[in-house]
Length: 160
Image (tube, rainbow, N blue to C red; front, top):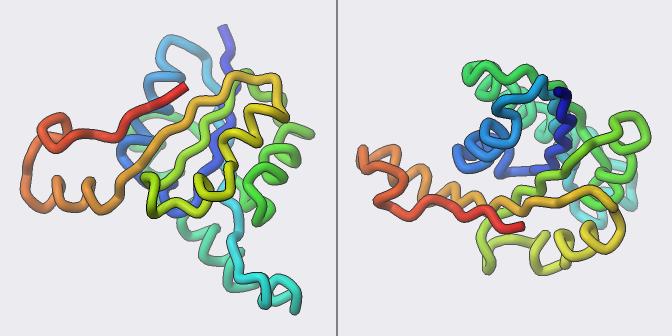
């Protein structure tokens, strides 16, 4: 059975919690995964059409994520998307009819996407089930440097 998973993530794209969630969602399926990394930019640079650095930075993050997924045995495609994550989802769905969507954010208080209501806006706009994964990169880095098991440090929750 085939499962098409659309993942939207920016800085959290290489987070362990996100990779684990993708692995769980793909397990047991002939999964097709598309990872979209929005090219985030300042309003001024966007207005001035100065997007090259934002696109290059998103592409680098995307490459790291795709390589990490490949190490897990998950073949994924990737693309840089619109700066607005909800628009990036809409654009991706035009060519990739996903069965489900995963949105990855930083924790509350550090996430512009949560402050802007990206998850709620996406759930209101799209029919596909949407999973929200919170990736705490600071915690993941601390766990990695201390050698503590992620569960002991409180791995990031997945909320539906």
